[in-house]
Length: 177
Image: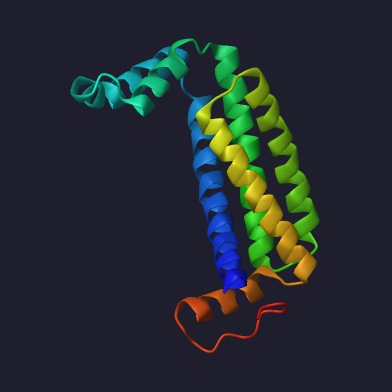
């Protein structure tokens, strides 16, 4: 049972990484064409209603303060980071979905490099969002290592887990009791 739950967490995590990569890619493209003043105005418009109802709303205030001091060079860095990070995540998810076990070490290395950067960010500019993302990425790296060590491709994990979730005759998981 524990093995199947970990398989499900791995699959949901991979899918989440793919969606997250797509959102980052779109965000990076948008930031390439937005000036800092337009970004501040857009965030102000997006959060105005929420802040009028709750002036202490954590997310709205984080967004407002996050873009308040962004200059053109900072915006270009964030856009480049989002484009690179999003593209790498999408490439990893696509490679995993295609079914090559050879991608596991590359996926772990790429996510590990981003993890190191996130840890640096936590040390220099601590934030709850980066802390949560760092823990999530560490769990995904561990689950990817687990799948690679078990010698399974993502599609095998997918089939067995879906069968388990819908209570069909699922193939046995090696090491499961």
